[in-house]
Length: 297
Image: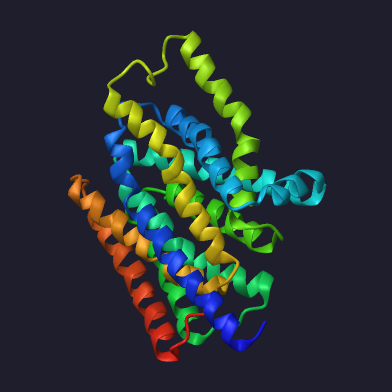
């Protein structure tokens, strides 16, 4: 690939990454609007409605061949199945956290995530860690330790979200499959258990969907495109940008999530304030390092 084409590819990847993280940043609003629905049912709807929406994109872009190839390749299918389990875990915990007024913890997880991206980039992809990046990682680690020790609260939500999504990103970056075909295979892998859960809820008379208002039913159906669009944009970006650059863009999401937490009136304890102070200091250092280098791709 020529230098000009490489720059153009990276530029579109950067735009896609910004779109993905902005949508994710406002996701707490969606899950607050659907708070009357249990987290597992919302998770099931995200999968079920993502399949037909994803299929339309696959057919429109004539990518069905990639989907068939993935199912015929045990290596690719195995990794996509693992990616599907990781993203389902990530989605489920995130939905539960928002509904349980734990947006700050969820936000913290996605602040930690970029720093994990940097470490993974160094360990597995041979990317070089600069001095300011090292210091940023140290500050973030101190922040998590402060919340655990001073706040008396081990941030398991934050760490689970961060670790699961980092591993998911690493898998998607290394698999030779397009963004949408890969995501479509992941949702197909999750479709049977998701649909089965909805059927089971209906037999127990616990299914909210179709037994509630039209507006809430519509929101649950929209869980499909709301799920697919940012993930496709993210996968598109992940294939075209350095992992450390993806980590830098990640700061958009948790910043917006943090603001939604304030909007919904979550209590910002002294431990959280101190923890976020270290995290934000790490973010500033990371951003300063990228700005002074004038290179984000």
